[in-house]
Length: 172
Image 1 (cartoon, rainbow, N blue to C red):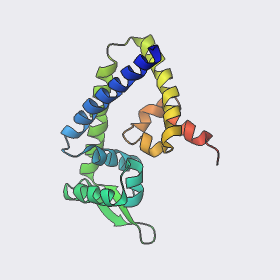
Image 2: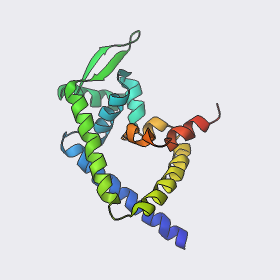
Image 3: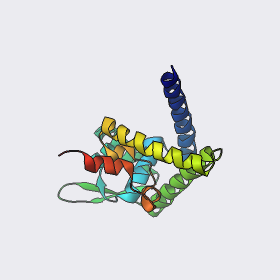
Image 4: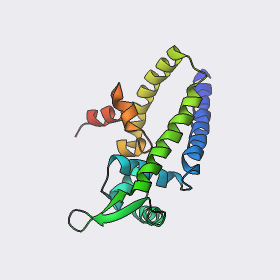
């Protein structure tokens, strides 16, 4: 009984936090969640192909192509010749500013969510989230997808990223 309630509370909290966080990160740029994630991904990994960018944000190749076209029209990205026949997608200055704004809005909102917790409760929550994220990675199997809106510098400044650690621990 208690496990079902805990699971229900987790699901409710996860959905509420996700909805409100995505609202915050997309309202300034006027782009959708996948496009916002694409800007964040490109900020950390410039020059990805459209196919690879789509894989990292969970979009099919046709959806990724449409998203990139939208980002091109909004002057957030540009296409450049990549390796071989690949076309590399890179952020423009405007795109870099938007990616930074997206991460700042995300951080500001999530900091507000944590405000009711004291320092020891936050430490306990961090340890529990590390454990949950390790399990979620094994379910999803793609660290780039799990971390598509992650501020990776914050995650790895004082600790190891639990998702990357789970990925490295996978056999093969």
